[in-house]
Length: 446
Ligand code: ADP
Image 1 (cartoon, rainbow, N blue to C red):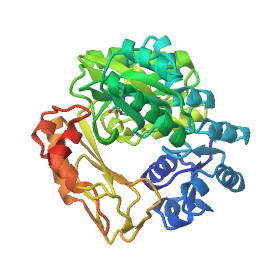
Image 2 (cartoon, helix red, strand yellow; image 1 turned 135 degrees about the vertical axis):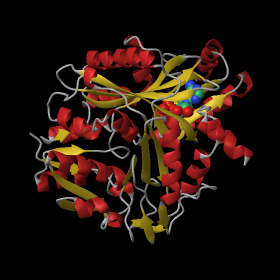
Image 3 (cartoon, protein in one colour; image 1 turned 90 degrees about the vertical axis):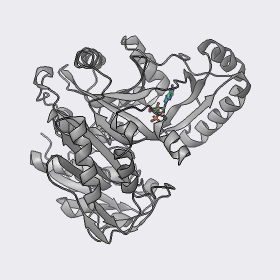
Image 4 (cartoon, rainbow, N blue to C red; image 1 turned 30 degrees about the vertical axis):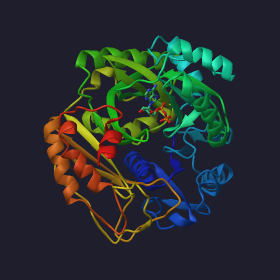
């Protein structure tokens, strides 16, 4: 039985994990960089260990420091959260080698899905639809050009090791293909240390729809429905909602069960998200995230399942506490990512929160690590809070969202709250009439 968990992360997700641990009666160890010494997670945890200077590679990515902290404090498991080491198969393997439980899937599954070419091959074998494209890495410019002709333009050149919305180049025609191919390959080598690229049909007006699954080691796997994450900026999600207005309950159930069965067949254990693009009433797989995701709360709100709790329990070798029949979907939920960025220029903003007031009332959940006087250091991702709103239907959810956004006060740093207010009042968003390019077009028009 897991009795003590080291949380190898920071910010709101560290606090979210800590809360699940407390609810389970599990002791917590926070790790932090010198810049985060006064972070909320450090204050709330049973113990804390400083693991290095502010730069992520010296602290939150410092594997020896993190594993040593776990050994010194007698933790028996490590939760990686998202980002940082959460999809690092070597880290997962090393954690297990030290006799600790990694709260995530097996290292082999992380490696398999971390290579997007391998992920697509695996998913195709399991009988799920993927975006048409090259079925392997394209290794030379000549071959790439030939395959590009077969796939058809426009197409995307994607990095096998890509992530975070980076490592993609569009080629609209044969004329601009070679330059895009060379740039994509060069950038992939620099950013991801792996210059393997593959080709994918560029879908012009898709929605981004992803399915949440959880599986235990006894072959039980369930799906928790989908999230629509089409509102994106530079391929990064800005707000997410569940359910998606474009899927019928019958389709959700049938497709979701197909995915859950596929994951059980693969022997996958843990939480995971299969991401798809949706166009012309069809879903096409693009990638799988083998970790908890930023947007998991919208699913928690409509299903009532505490996903991180289940994640900890299945990593501990326990059975899933829910079956597919126990899962039902109630109402609608929307999450706004509140980044410390200027809402017009998106320039990140660091500093001290001089005044903090959190919205409340029916259907409102705020996941954050903010408090009056807390510091927002300049070294990390700018996500500082998530506002999640739940109501009986989408219309009521939007009304609550508008109310909550106007109540929310975060002084001292710039935030995206003004942008979210604008989005919540936008007629197309109100009518759920958008695709993944909606925000780009909106920003271009302004
Ligand atoms: P990452 O791992 O960097 O998040 P993904 O493959 O998940 O990369 O894609 C991120 C986003 O990029 C998608 O949500 C979508 O907006 C866009 N995208 C990815 N593949 C395609 C495609 N084939 N056609 C059009 N847009 C795409």
